[in-house]
Length: 128
Image (cartoon, rainbow, N blue to C red; front, side, top):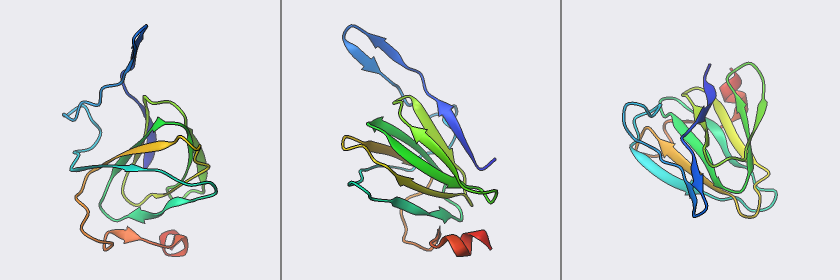
């Protein structure tokens, strides 16, 4: 499968919450870049697949709906827990919609950004 949900450790007590992301051999990808994404009302972010890059997405605040397609049709996955990540392998279409106003999407990438050459930018091209 080219996508899957991952559970990260979660610790909570009267002081608050801690969710560690250990970037070692237990993490599903080798991380070279970390970035944050937000979305305005009715915005769709992403909308592409990658030829080599793999990513893990976590809604560190708020909620968002991921639409993923590994060639077998669109599937919607709601990201609504800070310790739940969505692993997207290469050759998997992904986009994000229905951002809550407080949503911050934490993204871990297996590559440094080097331009758009790694991107499959249209769904039609992806489905070929």
